[in-house]
Every structure is written in C-alpha cells, then in structure tokens.
Length: 542
Image (cartoon, rainbow, N blue to C red; front, side):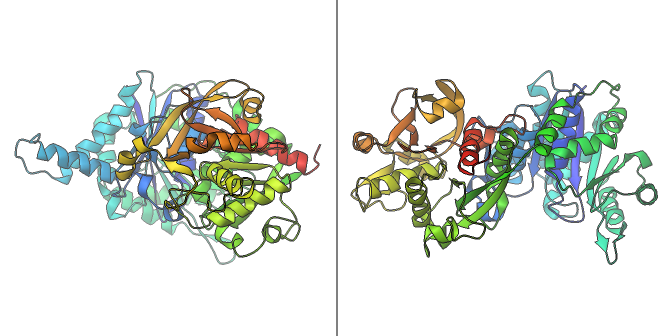
C-alpha cells in the first residue's frame, strides 16, 4: 500500500515547508524508497504562469510544460522522482474541473458542494499520483499557505479524510511551525501550541513536528512542546538556521533521526541509508577556495525567489568549480540611468564583476539597461550568459551596435521597428493570444560542433525546457552570421535558433531555453558550470 505524508505549516509563511518536505523526500530516497512529491497551492489562479514573479517568485516549468510554483524546483533539486502537471494542483484547477463536470451533467443534478465534491476532486488527484507509477512507495504532499487560512481549508480537510481512510500507519501529518526568539534569547513555544491546536480543530493531530528556530532546541524545550501538543517527544525536531547551505538540511534532519521516526510511523522496516550525495555536496561546499563576483542584471531584483532556480544553479556551478559565488544584483532599470562601469565595472562597490548573467523576463522595462550590460561585457571580454530574454538582449545589442541598425528591436517591445530581429512567429500568434507561451516544456536542440555550447554539453543533441513565444527572426539570420554572430544551436529541423555566441570572446553565450531548471547540487547544469569556470579564469583563480 502507498504511504502518504502531508506537510503543513503554521504560525507564518516562509518558514521553509518546501525545503523541509524536499529534505524529507531526499532522506526517504536515501533509504531506498521511491518518492513522489506534490504541491497543493490554495490560490485561485489555475497555474503560476500568469502570476507576477515580483510577487509570487519564479514560474518553475516541468518537462510536460506545466507552469508551477517554485517549490517544485526544490523537489527537483532534492529528489529524483518525476515531476509533471500532476504534481502541482491549485484551487483554480480544482474548481475549474468541478464546474466543468457540473456543466456537463456529471453530478446528475445533485447540489455541488465543497464537501464532498471539491475534496473528492483534490483526493482523486493525490491518489492518482501514487497510482501513476506502480513503483511509488511514498507520496509527500505539501499544502501551501498557513493553517488557519480560509483558502487552505479544503486541502486540509482532504488530508484529514485520507489519513482517516488510509489509517495512521499509511498516512501521517508533518507540521512545520515557528519557535520564535523574543527578548534576551528567550525561545517561545506558545505559537507552536496554537498552531497545533488549529490543526487539531481541523481534525488532524500532527504526528511529527518540525520546529523552525534560530538554534537547536534542547530536550527540555522539546519535552514542553511534546507535552502541550500531544506529539511524541522523539517526533519533535528542529529546523535551525544554517550558515552553510540549504543542502545540509537533509543531513541535519538525518542526525536528528527524522527519517527513522517517519519509517517507524508509516510501518516501513528500517533499512540502510546512503547519504553519499549529500555528504559529497557538503564536501564540495567546504572545499571551495576563492570567490567570483557575478552580476545578475534583471527586472525583479527585489525578490530573489523571482530567479530562484538561477541562483541555485549558480551555487551548484560554484560547488563544481570550487569557488564561492558573490552576487551583484543590478536592477536593469537603474543601469539605464548610469554607465555600466558604475554598477558592474571598476567604479562599482567591490570592483568589477567576473561575469554577467541576464535572466528571463517579460515586458519592456529595463531592456536598455540589459543591452548596456551586454555591450559592456562584449567589449570588455567579460563572461556573459543570456537566458531566454537574455539571448534576445544579445541579439538586439549585436544588431544595434555591430550591424548599426539603431532601431533593431523585438516585436514584443516595438512592433513598428523596421528591423524586428526577434518576433512572434506567425504560427504562434493564436497560441499567444490565449496567454500561453508558444513553446512550453521540454524541447530538443541540436548543437553545432566547435562551439562553446557543444563543449559544455559534450554531445550534439540535448533536451532542455522552454517558456517563451518570441524567437530569433530567420529573416535576419544570414546578415547576423555574416557579421560574425555565431548560431550555435538549432531545432532539429533547423527552423528555429536555440543559441547564439559572440565570436572572439572568452565566453559569451545566449540560449533560448532555461537550463537552470535541470541543475542539481550534485550535477550542475553544463552551461552554468562552464560560465562559472570562465568567470573563475577571469578572476585569476587557479
């Protein structure tokens, strides 16, 4: 029988449920179990695709083109189970499905209600994930939001029903809560007590508590929490602040025997654990020498989660190359008001950057600043990495400053330009009008030999994930290449450009896809790895 673990949060948001759930998944995989991760988001949006990155964080894309919450990125980086549309559900999706069924007469005229119809729809999707792969042992379901939020109630009720129906030996509740520090280093358990009480009022008695605290809780504090929450003492754990990396958290939980307690509670016999992946990552982290300064020139710099996978992929590359990554976050709009030297060069705080990355984004704001950064990197031989919009910036900057087409632009920003070097392809127009990117999910690219992208991957065919509608315009392909710009990857039918490179440059690559989504702490994305290697060389680190 499949096992189900529901991970919930209390007291406040941003406690790290996603990392905690992912770390638990990593530990169970290390014990030889097949784990599937799942996220239930209470927002009414059908998916994360139309949500502002500045408010919600990045949109994580799966192979099958699902636009999901960034926590699926955590699942992908910590665990190896397949992720698809099925692993991410929202209130919007649930209500959309139930209303459609009602309109089709599927409920035979009965009154459609939250219970049982909404909860049954949620339940069916959770159970379907377990059935999708017959080898699945455990499904870990993270319920977004905070207990007490009105939006989360249908998901918590569904969890209660599954725990009741499957039995506590097959389904358990893991509750993440806050133990704040007040005054002179005094830890307070009252918020945790109230949080657990709110869960109990929903009909769920947490089996395991993970207490987010500034320091490791001592036995006296854990005993007090256990007493007032009706949770076993050996099932009260601490997720304390780490000064290293989030990839140490599986080892921290393992040292507290979280995985052993979970196995005992779900009736799985203890088995040998293999934590080599995580010990190796920590060895790489500890052995880093020197640091490189990487300038991130983007649109949403006030919220790091807007580029979560990119920052993590850079850290992974730092592990692989043995260097620390120091981020220089530059709002592209600010760069429009000054010279690149002021924010990226010798005049910048801390001195010149060793590499520049321009990430994905939508809209015209900051485009001039990004092109300024690209021009400065090209002329000063600074390693440069353009992702999606970043590749478009490279193409527009080349057209304006090398081909001297001062009006060169994208049809996304200026459809009236005479030189639309980037455009919405005719066959994409109808798709775009529905608000869905024309190219979404995994797609194959064929790499050109003797290019830097070919050297990075070491093979001629790759599969990476896309999320965009605008493309390099084939109308200008010959003029671009005749002027020196290198086209280094194409779709298999050679109809679309997937990557460009600067000639006579240490490392200047732009890609149409998003390689950050497949990067892992123990297997850095080849492009991110080589980008950091080039930055390391620029910094003069041996």
